[in-house]
Image 1 (cartoon, rainbow, N blue to C red):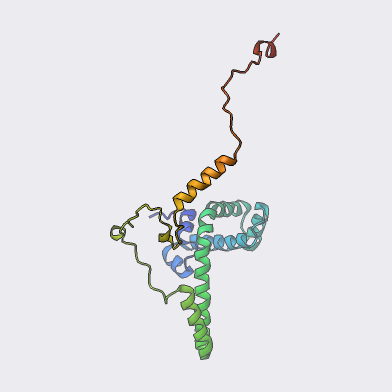
Image 2: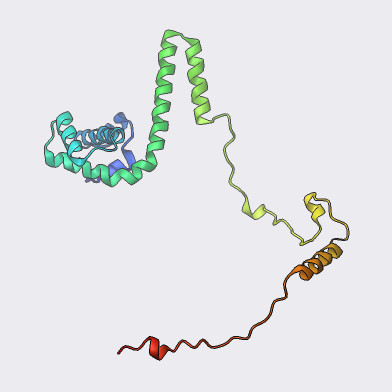
Length: 200
């Protein structure tokens, strides 16, 4: 049975543990995947690097040919949108690996304080003290009934007594203070377009 292309494997298993990769894929594929993983990390650490620099680093680190280095670069570039999305998951995974390793080392030394700190950090980071989020039962959500009102007391505002009378007084006051507006009939503008826009 033929194996999928490296880019397809990288999309799903770029950060899978090496032991698991070796159980599922031939050594040639795993070695290339590990190389792409390392070079991806180099790209993250050197975001301003040019393609030429990437190729030089790949050739120098792994003693590979220039065409193969460019091939690895094309895999990484094709993966970048997916990797940008997955990089946070990768760093979470890496943090967990580091904490578990710290815990194991402390356990070997019988350092209970460090073990407790590592376990606490692991639990806090993974939020295992919180309940799993439950799906919202949308069919059980009751629509809030709303009733239109002009009573401000529903908002906790004290209503002004005789507000309508006060509004009418204010309208009358400001109408009396304004200058009379004279309505002017519309007149057609006499632009003399034939003279102004004569092409001659």
